[in-house]
Length: 356
Ligand code: PLP
Ligand code: COI
View 1 (cartoon, rainbow, N blue to C red):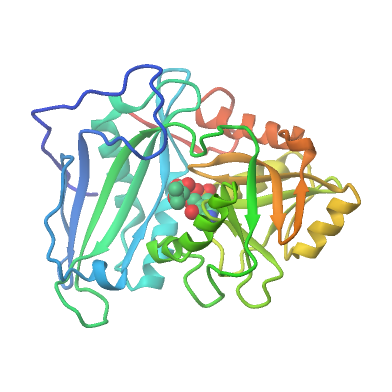
View 2 (cartoon, helix red, strand yellow):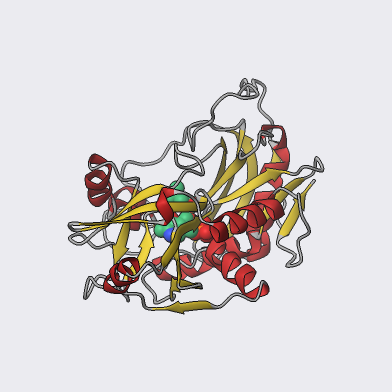
């Protein structure tokens, strides 16, 4: 159990007005969580302090070799007035899987969850209440040794910042267009694809810029070896409804094991639907589309929630999905996942966690 010292701000900021469009990730709350790590001493000095800039050596290793990790989860204002998190234990577990890959020290899962709850509790008045909004929570760890050699750092900072946010895509629940990338690749098995670390996102930017320039919202990555099999989207996992079955790429080491992905798989199985986690080639999608069997496509992610895909581009082919409108199953999944998150419906899985 962490002993968290709390220093409240003496100059709280103005909160966004009711109804003001929040966008995603632009606004930050009054406080942040920080904890230090030093080799031989472990994690220490857990504290919640006024939100503000950091002072770091320009030689801090994170700036040069990217030794860092991050997570993403949300706090929701329930319809019953309570504040909820969604499966924070899963973010804690994934943190340690990422840390393991990046030679960052392990962080006890219960400390991760305690820190998230504590900082959300301090800034709970920042959880927005309008439909579709939430408080986005961004835990991260950075390597802070002032050293230019390539080696794991001996010191780190674990921090959590909070951002009241609306929909990740400006289009909200309207289907997005996705660009299947056939030139750049994001990750390969044995690399860092399964880890939540900045380098994976830096690797994605060039393709994302290209896709944006062509009017697409995000990139869908193919496998890094054969450039044939579907992996995931820039900030979400991907699902297809093909001939009545729910199909999603299996976890193969190069894609992020999404918590929303896991929740959707569990939900669909709970409903008695057939779910397949397997390799899916882009040719299979083109073929299914030609035969009228590619019925629905949607992405899943904390920021993106359940995001219907209305258009998929691959080279010279553009596949229009379900007439460019959200499919029935996608809508039902969206309603159920968000219903659980906002406390509108029963939570048979025990995924909702209250923050006082
Ligand atoms: N894939 C990538 C690359 C992501 O950045 C995200 C977002 O976190 C996801 C998938 C979805 O993961 P989760 O559902 O845990 O948010
Ligand atoms: C999230 O959904 O939490 C993410 O981390 C996506 C982010 C890259 C915007």
